[in-house]
Image (cartoon, rainbow, N blue to C red; front, side, top):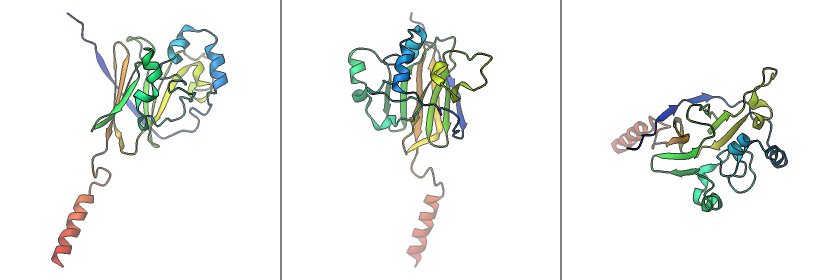
Length: 205
């Protein structure tokens, strides 16, 4: 009898965009030097096929910069990685939601991933792979963040409802995030009423 995989819902934190977070960009040459140190944990977090790898989409792209993920097809951007079995990342959309699935670094007993949604319609997935030293006076996301943590920031589509986001992680560290699509008239709850009144008045004239 197979054991069922547990799934835990993650809290989606809401906050205003702050300029002091992710203010240090990760450059191609810096990343290559960082990876050349041979740390096995670093290789797992940022290696080929990882959601947090700058080379996930083929060319170098700083994960701390917001990427318009759902404007592209995963089959196209990830074709090379999938053909060699190097990634489990997947994203798609249904009639109701925008969905992203990926494996996370770490183990089922230690999931420190945080999800943020800010006022600029960006969803952020981040966490630490190494704790900061006590002597450090700067919050890790405000400096050379890759030395302590990982991040992937994504632009939400225009019709995404940033107030309705759900995120889950399983015990084997499979992550899923679902962003609901706006329903017709959801931004203007009285719009339908105004139209009906205008129509009624025009008929009476």
